[in-house]
Image (cartoon, rainbow, N blue to C red; front, top):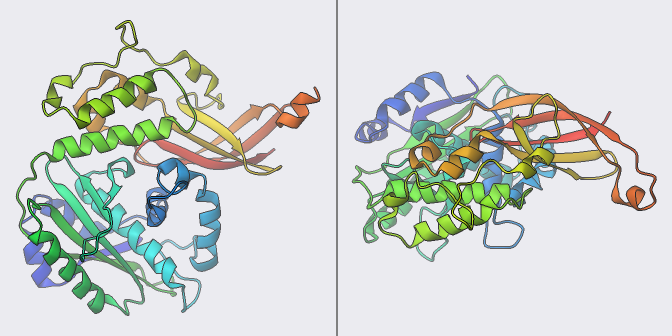
Length: 368
């Protein structure tokens, strides 16, 4: 068990029993939460803001390697749980940990992936000011807190409850409102602990299915634009914009993406040049130079392509992969300056890629 999961107290357990996913919560409380690639990616959501370079998942991907170096200065990444390297971690590290654990936990409860989360815009009131998602049945809002040694649990509980009261006064807000407080320690023998605070009894939002569908489609549109300009992405962009303003959007369920002459798209031929790994041809993406010795691969599993083209809403919302780590080898041409001088030589790169539940692959590669 990497992270213990608990109800904050008996009162909150009773309140949580009114929620539709209570059985899932109990199961995770019994089994605990695993520290994996998803959790560290969720930590980076701390940096999402309305500023160029910090808006999209692609923006965060370009910073992942540097952020892991930051975490290594404060967090023992070799530990089986979340463990501080000393007794005085920086406050910002606690914030990263709180966000990562909370989004990972609620994703496990509701069967979500990182493709389903968006940041709630800030306001001047005490908003639950972090993330919003949907599991196709309910809209979910989560307030994330992290504390070293549990020293601030009581004050964090009071802050979350105050914010939830404000959210409940807003017109038409029948969302699930979760509060998650994560405590971590410097002793690796003590597992990190995530405490769940109760959301109020809920009603179904006007259309949470639509909210989750739109969020997922926007996510994959952003992801593919990191490494591809395939024509089907233009059609996907138009479909996303169409869904935003179409109240009868279910008429588009299973209406495939088509080209300018009305022909259904197939998996783009251009992806044949986006498969750098002979032993893993199902992974498509690009390799980017970080420095003279280091490269970054960023891509996706090709399995999502046909699903997006088909526009089967059920398949899009049901898509979820098992997080995994794969070892890969790629051969690329030398840097552009060598190519100009006609002295280009092939470079062999090796590295490990980590995938998450949304089917995204990322990893550093080095010269063999």
